[in-house]
Image (cartoon, one colour):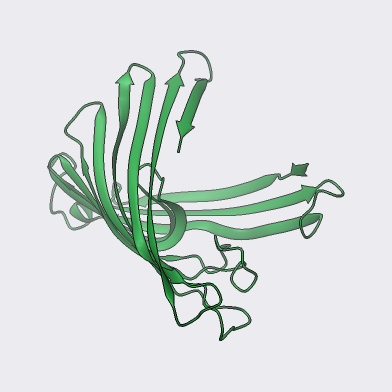
Length: 244
């Protein structure tokens, strides 16, 4: 049994009719395990720290280049922010990033240059790298937004792993360098019935186990499909199901 209460404080400011936007959110979380159920410690504080701190500029408004109704728009967001490609199947992660969001008529293009938050736990739970992550992310996503109820997308994403071992181990490397090619769609089937679907192919190289001279190939694929039913009732209850 675990109890995990938390608290968040946030502030937002907009300048020049939305041309510039600032956002910051600080979170504090407390974890308490019942006696005998803990992993390492029975209780632990996490934070306070800023899980989001970013600045966004609407390029057209800031430099008086276009109007909000024009078919070409561009926003640039810099800082610690949540990043999601597609439905979030391959990438849904907070990171330090520069995100360029461009609208070209019926197309929307996302460009990403990012870096993992250094104190963010690693997906690899090996002790030398479990407590931190140092990864670089590069990606581009294309969405088609002409359809009223469906938004198809395709993206390419690269992850460069620069995580170091603590303490250093000359005989073992833990790096995992991978690329992802994803495609799918999200939208509405009928009134109050939404869906999302995504397929991903992954390739790359990872460090061989107990052999620092060899790299193992990465070849994998996966898919995700989900439905969500909403109800026209107070508090908007919903039921969702998903298969990966």
